[in-house]
Length: 120
Image 1: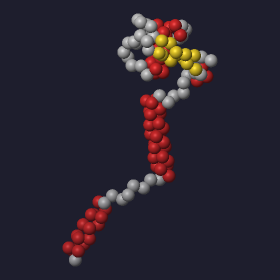
Image 2 (image 1 turned 30 degrees about the vertical axis):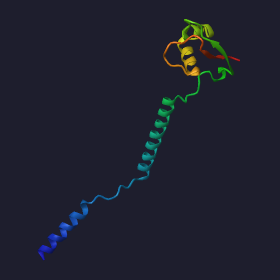
Image 3 (image 1 turned 135 degrees about the vertical axis):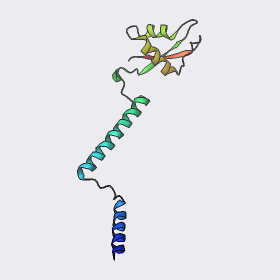
Image 4 (image 1 turned 60 degrees about the vertical axis):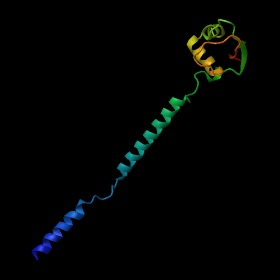
């Protein structure tokens, strides 16, 4: 009889070692949902920041058309930027011209036609 009692106690201990499935209260489920939403919004914000989907600062000032300027010998994007937008920061204008015309960091070659934004 004593061996049966020891065996019964041992089997009871072994069954209690198995962890039950996680059970969340209503508050716990709410916390998990809020955490998931925060992570999702953070990821969307990060993707938007990396891909540059933020709204342009002057969306109403966006040019409706472009004019063409042919680069002369010795002319730089900096000079062109200062000429077309004398009151703006030339660095921003140079970046815009590079983007619009698909230019890299290399110097301009004479004879290249550049699209220049024209405010309407």
